[in-house]
Length: 272
Image 1 (cartoon, helix red, strand yellow):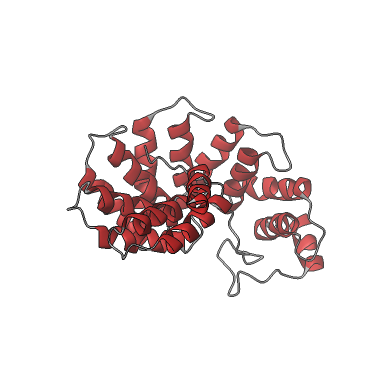
Image 2: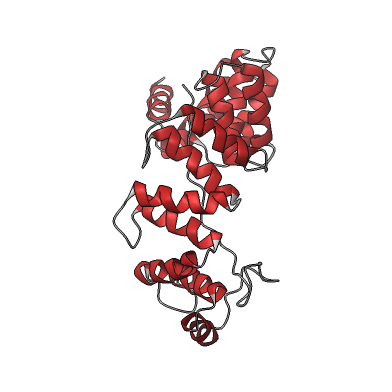
């Protein structure tokens, strides 16, 4: 099965100090002294910014414990981005002991405010049974909410559910639909999965040329499974001229990216 479930990355933008909206330049950390003064005065945006500065080590030494402290202050005032980031920290055990129950709690608070990444991660929690009983229907519900807002990881995971018939009737056409949405946003796993669908003729007519196209997109991003598959296409001459030298090169790339199958075939070709 091609099942991939992803926890999304942290919110990386800074908020305005006096509001919950994003700053004009969300990648530039604000002045530390001004931020800590306003954070200590209870300004929620400043508390969030300080948490992010400590997490990233921007203008201050990196300190996950301090990041958690200030994220909690902002989260308690209802800042969805802080709630989401706290969910990540509990999920990964950064600055706090790993605690899926607390991760779920904070994701839920952020998701209820419409945070799309939190909705996607709640889908993952229900999908894996982390911090909550495993529930395919709830996983689908949250993936769908996030996917409908353009979240690529949720679109990928929704595609996987349709692909495998997990929680929904198996529907390869719907799987293709969601894989394409994620692939068009550059998601390497979705691109690789589309390659497989075209390679095997699942949900679409078999088309080795399209398979190579999608494998190549994912392989160029360093995705091992696609590199291995592209090696196979070169080795067999499917959708691309047969070329053992190119096959070997892609098997080697897959091997370097921890694909045991890639390592095995690279070794085999070197012995021929």
